[in-house]
Length: 214
Image (cartoon, rainbow, N blue to C red; front, top):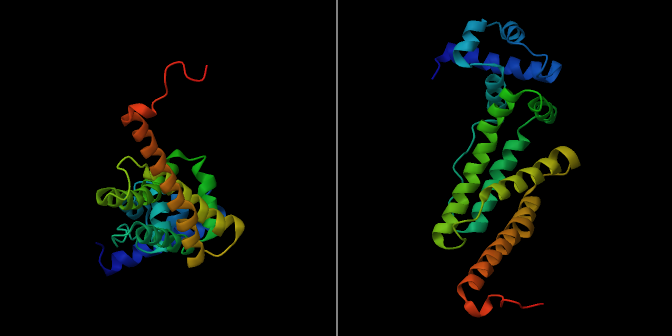
């Protein structure tokens, strides 16, 4: 934990990073430019962050505020999903659209940045959804083999598209719509589909007869 002077210097570095990404883009930004803008030495920057990708991710994360990685445990799947989506929504609303879109473009050209972003943001979302799905499975509300990655991808894509592409509000009405009309029906469908496969396998009378349909 940096002291008061160190914390102020770190804040200046992160702020300079965000400014430069917005002004000239990730690709053109250099550590020299960040050091000059923050009035800090490159040695100071490299002692805290190993490279430009990690520094940018830290700056974006700091701009959004501390991440709440522990999803709420209400004991009810629907309420837990609503809680996770609100955390994701609040994180997106705290971001600058031009900055986020610029980072996404840069990720396609810079594997180090892509790895850093995925490690700090994408995996956080998987962890949150995974915890909710695991708790529901422990309660018997879902089968243990439900893949949380699908629901993470759907939720992230819909929230991102609505905010940054469609320009529509990410209000509670949309969050409820996403849970009630997309995620829960999909979970019910996949649960029923899995249950149906299991029932057929366990019930010999439901298995297709050899030669049937010919």
